[in-house]
Length: 388
Ligand SMILES: Nc1ncnc2c1ncn2[C@@H]1O[C@H](COP(=O)(O)OP(=O)(O)O)[C@@H](O)[C@H]1O
Ligand SMILES: [Mg+2]
Image 1: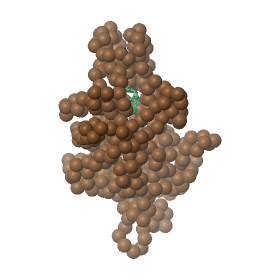
Image 2: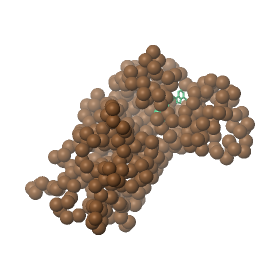
Image 3: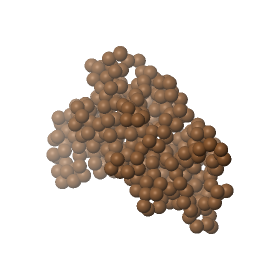
Image 4: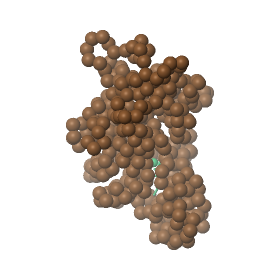
């Protein structure tokens, strides 16, 4: 790229601002949600401090330069969900060179690719090919620093069964469950159904690697279990069957510590569902995305001080148990007896300005712009050496 064509030029005086690639879109079902997140981040990121290069990933996985126009990326009523396409939104393609040189290759239309040095990548991607360690691995190979969890923590956090194994090893309680492997389910379904008899109804049947409650069924009767396992296995061949717990749903935001310090933990937030306003009988897809009046997020959650301490302490321990970096939202079931069971962790939680993770930080004294800066500064501190 010539200097004129660089997406933004540094001010002539003073040190160069770190160049941040904001990466969004992607191959998962949460493509448009990711674009909306990017709209929030592009509007709020501190431009005095960082030079910003928006890069979208098409649904087929191509990386393209995108106009720095948050309004075009927002989810808006009366307009189809935003989609990054090479023809529509792309102004040139972006690829990653081999050899770990800490740059990307940008090819403007009709021109050969040129190197563009990048200081940090901010992946705002959810789900498969985004939150599961795959993009993180690609960035490691390219020698690029990035915000958020590394390869292992991302992959482990995406897989609910692996998460339970790691948390269990750290003495952190999770919900009693049975793992259904595709091979066992095919060869000996009776064995699986027998094992599930030890669990308490209602059962929750879920794919190990998914999100947004996709593929999850609440099962009240044994005769419905088989169909629920088959439905979950259409989303991920590895399935979890869990005892249903009657509990409050509390979420805790964790932010990686600077300079080797312990992670920071925000005030816990609670998800409240109102069946009279159309909430389902659990936090299902419909309730999450379609029944807007049925769900409210309360932060700080009304908690006794020992419950608050237990949740915040357990969230920090879960972050460490998974080897978390940058950010993680740890989701709990808090029982009437005061037990805090980890339900799941999210290494790229919802991150629009209205999402729970930024909201919990806002309430805890870190606004959205400062949160984005803190995450970038954490990433800039990281080594690009995998054996660091
Ligand atoms: N064992 C369980 N007991 C009670 N409710 C559950 C259980 N597992 C899941 N749920 C309900 O289903 C929702 C989605 O499950 P979760 O494991 O968080 O999947 P996702 O990754 O799709 O969010 C939870 O927020 C909760 O309302
Ligand atoms: Mg969840």
